[in-house]
Amino acid sequence: MLRLSARLFINSFEGVDDETAGVRPSSSTNNMAFIALHVLDARAYLARYLGLEYQHPFTGLEAVNSIEDMTDYPSVEDLLASWKEVSGLLDERMQTLSSEQLSKESPQEFPVDDGSVMGGLAFLLLHESFHIGQLALLRKYLGLSSMSYS
Image 1: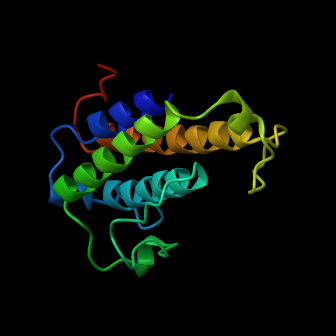
Image 2: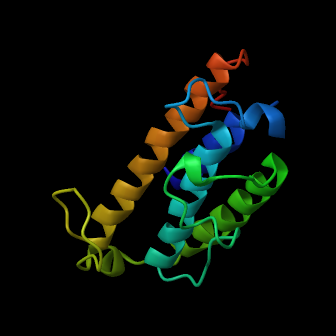
């Protein structure tokens, strides 16, 4: 799931430039750039949750909770580069996690029945999937082709 989400996030931005990423369908809807920052922040959190020392690559933007607080966005190129970096680190980390580590009690509570680290991991990947679906929908709204799974 980690690799699939990584690929789908990247695929969501196929053919998307900075201007397109900043388009909001309405005043009550987020744009692709804001969603990307949120998902990148969540993936940076996932890295720390799994024991990596990784900080959000865009200092100051990790605390933004509302699109109304945004005045400037990183470029799509920079967002994707940061996504690939943290995804590569997570991919390596996942290969070193033991069943014992994943079955330990999660240091963070999540809204799932499984209170283990694996339950937290599952929730965080589901969270990414939710927002990648939003990115895919925004692609179609913006007149782009459907997001590819390949």
